[in-house]
Length: 76
Image 1 (cartoon, rainbow, N blue to C red):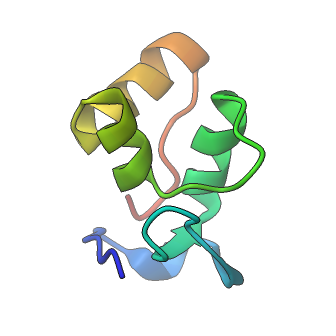
Image 2: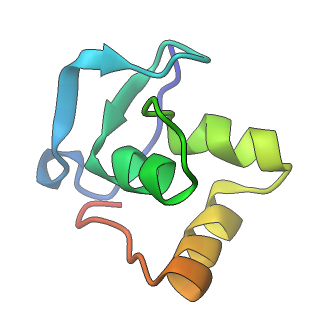
């Protein structure tokens, strides 16, 4: 399972019944926003999305902000 470190994970909305189809890790509201912006049908975790594109999670967050206008959820 993919474990990620967040500044305040309690501020994120976690989906207990959904897991990342690639790694099986937990997914949250930020993962859902990123997945939808990129046109995925399923909710993938940001780590797996970053890995697919060959970038770091910080680079993914910057891309989401600069190209899609999405700002990370509180706690990230």
